[in-house]
Amino acid sequence: MTTSSQTDVAARVRNVGKVYRIYDKPQDRLKQMLLARFGRRYGRDFCALHGISLEIKRGEALGIIGRNGSGKSTLLQILAGTLSPSWGEAEVYGRVGALLELGSGFNPEFTGRENVYLAATIAGLNRKQTEERFDAIAAFAEIGEYLEQPVKTYSSGMMMRLAFAVQTAIEPDVLIVDEALSVGDFFFQQKCTRRMHELRTKGTTLLFVSHDMGVVRDLCQRVVYLRRGELVFHGNSAQGIRLYFQDGVPQNPSKKAALNLSSPSAMEEILERFRPLACWMGEATDEGHDQDAHILGLALLDKDGRPTTKVIMGGELVFWILIRHFSSTPMNVSVALKNRFDQVISSFGSYTLGLDLRQPRPASLSLFELKMSVMIEAGEYSIQVTIGPQSPLPNRGTSNEETPWLGPFSVSWEYERDPAPFLGMFGVPVTGSFRDLNEALS
Image (cartoon, rainbow, N blue to C red; front, side, top):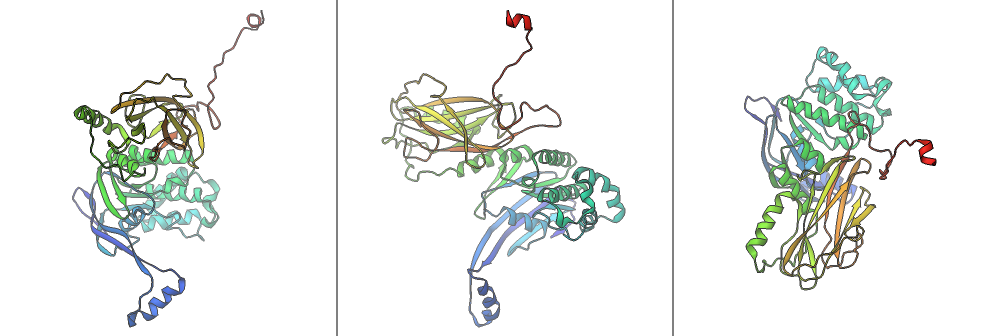
């Protein structure tokens, strides 16, 4: 529910849970309605949220992250007031702008103009206030003459443009965004991100759900991490994102033994220094007799050595791979760069670079560093890392453990500010100059 408050709290969630009734067959729903009075039960319960409690401060940007099915959208719908919890209470203080399901709140038979007035009225604006904002809404949406056509003729991108323009123009106290930006084109996504930054500086509270961890890290100071409907982390965004990445990598449950090293204090000091930088950390174990080494940690850094999941086209990324050695066998390291369709667009590493391998000491750590000039088109990417004594191939590790991956990280382009470093899918390393013709042919 939405009420007013003079405190510094924008929203409170107290022990909120949500249970859905799942039916295997459509007719079971009808049977449940007709026969429930006789004690007959059909279907089964699915608990989407398990007693979530949190407090959101005014002016805070809170990211809500988790895998598909973790309860993120359910929590936002409860906060937006479009869904009632099965138990517990959720309170949001002030005017709420919500971008949830695409086109929600729009009448498909109305024109875009009519839907602007409808959405603004639902948000609490009168006609005069809407008229004062209308030109700005139309300019931001950039859908031109389609504004006078029925919304049912819009593409998904046009629908998102208009919805985002309206919900941000009402100057909400709390703005709720659920993966809406994934629908629009890349340049409009950049425009929306800038608008959210502007609203944050004006004191708007932002509740943001996305699978793009680069955007989450950039927009949000804190994150809530949900796993199968349970709140497992609420705090610093960098720590939450690191946990999100780490949970995405399958762990070998047999590797739980404690370290047994000749210098455990030195090992622990290295790990403590690496952990704040890492996007993924594996288990440090002494069970390595069936393999020569395993990957202990991955980090993705910018050119200044800071953890990042976002880079501008033409910029530089640094990959750090921390390796735990169990023998003196030298190891090659290979990195496969994958796009969102799991296609390997490039693979590189110590073998392709022709590097001389170092012979490690058993029970030691080593660090492999790769610096990449990001001459690939804008989008989301992940990397998969493999190690082996020969030239390990993508998706084909040489040990019994799962090969870890890192991502997604995003590549973007500030198209309104900077010229594109290249056009197309890749930027091929080239040089060029104008030569004197006589000199060249002499």
